Image (cartoon, rainbow, N blue to C red; front, side, top):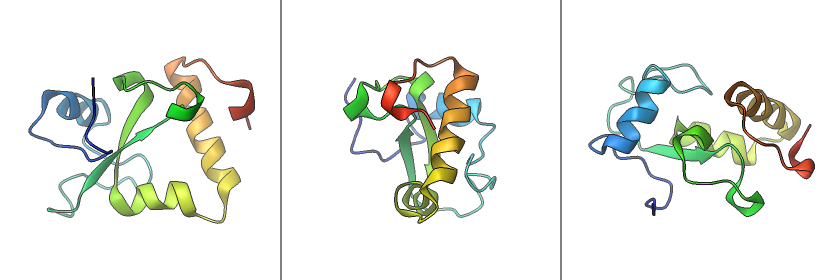
Length: 101
């Protein structure tokens, strides 16, 4: 399945299932996806695609756009590595050796 550049579309079943799995909340900030209407939602790969991560619901989380930027560009990178590692473990995803905190 080809996903559209990371943007989520809550009119598509694939993204609705992801949102439902997360109780319609962003796992980064904890706010509902309906809190900031019109704010773009992004799909974030838990295991990065460059490390073999797939476009599967088990490997994706939906996040608000600013939260996605925080994951990628926050100076406290070790916090986000541990945050995503905990999600990987809870979903039973295989962990690349160079992607373990």
